[in-house]
Image (tube, rainbow, N blue to C red; front, top):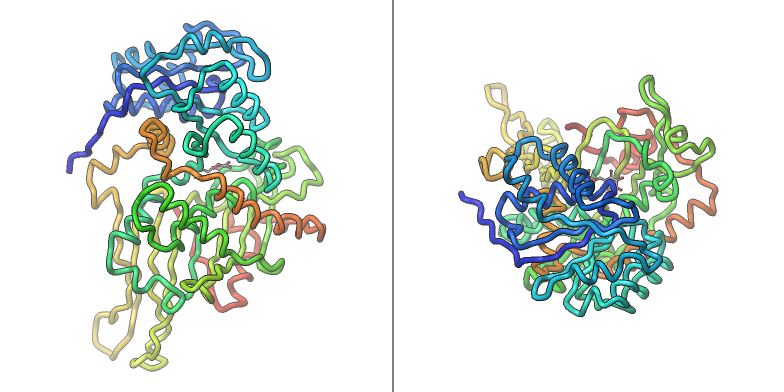
Length: 482
Ligand code: BG6
């Protein structure tokens, strides 16, 4: 298989927050990879815009260092050619400095995109100035990073501010999980195969587990994280998107609004979550690493670094099938997985000795992307009919060969989609608002109850109560393993 790279149109991309962490770790290295792959055309230009007083040489040197760090195997001449395409403008997001220069730098006849990789408090000011200084016309696109608000009211206010200057079709709200190859594969698996769809409902599915486990802690981003917690940082967006893709009805076409309409219906069908169906946790100190509270410098912090919850979708397809979501920092392994656990066969012809066997389809999002279907077969050998579960295991890397190694990172893909003008993998304003409308009462509930997160051991699967959430219903979380 030969991967097909179609170059996007020439563009001017301005990165506000061009010297920041995201620009260095993801955006600039990602653009470089797309440049090498031939997808970012030679006529494209990238302009870093930030408060720092830098000349273009200093910005280019910073970008070079960032790319060198993130892209170990690279061609020096390609890197030189990429760096030549970078410019820099010192800009004041809330003042007037730098805006006329930026306007002057923009070329006619190319796609204009503006990446807001800055504190959310500056989004409104940027939108206003981009518009006011005539830098962004009706064809320009703006890319907005999360967090998109911290509750429904702030998300609404932000949507309203952006809408004063840009139409919905110009706004690209990033949830980088949607840019992950395997997350898109969820749609391919569901809607490209006949095999699964007839079984994809409450009649056959006992429950679905969605796990996004991380080994990292929050050190370094404590100030932000302690105001957010796992619910706002991960569940309201990334896990919610996974839930939507796994649960939604087939859209009529793989087109932006068709897909986003179906996702929105899922979010709007979510039931409120009972307090006893939510478990929050906070990692304790270990021999090597400080506790969550020490990491965020908040000895009394009640913010959760772990959340597990049982969620119901009240619609025809899913009534009665629970979805269990779980995410946390400093857990046993870095792994993201969705497991669809099917019901028992209605009658066992093998009697009780046959035991209880369930088919499980597990989709590994990262790392070691792939799919496993657990099926029941006869244990080989004499001595009667003993059953055993075996995995039909597929690793995408093995199945697809070298092509799978060259898969673009989520940010690379999403930035290219912005230039192409394809909003399928971006969140629409109403989607974000609906997600907050569901999340807000859960957070308000535990705040009103004065709930304190349960401590958990670093390197574990989270607090014991999360296991109990499943056990008491005769279910079990899948093991967290790399
Ligand atoms: C970010 C969160 O959106 O996603 C982080 O703010 C989290 O807290 C990260 O670590 C996880 O992303 P990934 O791609 O490493 O799974």
